[in-house]
Length: 317
Image (cartoon, rainbow, N blue to C red; front, side, top):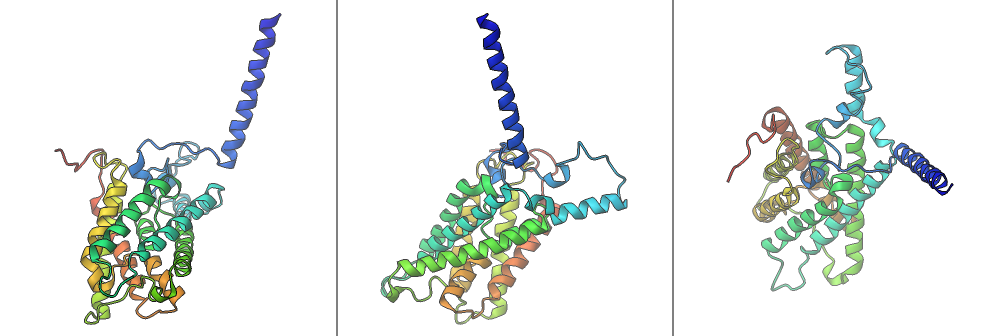
């Protein structure tokens, strides 16, 4: 008589597990791990694959002819991304973007503050602070939100078809809020005698606005191009290296552009100190340049540089 009772108990536990598991799936609380590893999740959260929005319900939705009104309507729905932003998990992703940009601006701009007049921070010091900060944040926040922490990156992914419109807008708003909060906290925790500037990005006295925009376009183009390349799910030669590759790209760009423009390549990074310090001179340069560079990089990678098959174009050392 003891064995049937034990079997009934196991069946009851199994039914309870199935009920809980199905409820968790409906709430979107179970995060499935992606098969591509950390390199994909650095820009796309875990489980994301290229064109995931188009493939999400491919098995349940009947195929329609190319160019038909139903096809165009479906593509427009995927581009807008209303279904994506109404999920519970999306709030966690937004918080991750706020937190990431907050920490990036707080730590990065702190390295720009001069504590002594005889020894200001060097270009190398600033470059590696920003680069290593982004690499560290990518390891933590990559599986959650993709760790964009940069409106230019989000905009570039929108152009390349890897980020929906509503998600891009939501990310940019959260990134700007996080950047302003980071500068505000930095302003509170350093002495007032050293708080002037708060790491503001500014042009060199001999650099024109047009030259500044050009430099910001170039360095942001490089950054967003590298982001696309190292997170391409069809490439296996860069798996696990995305955070380091992106961080080193930011460091290299800073080494080249800090003396010229202050090397923003991130509109939110320039917005935070400008709002807290109430200094908006030439702020438009640090929005126009990075957004153009990021958008062009996204378009170029989509049109001609992305891998067409597994391991195509991989280096073999």
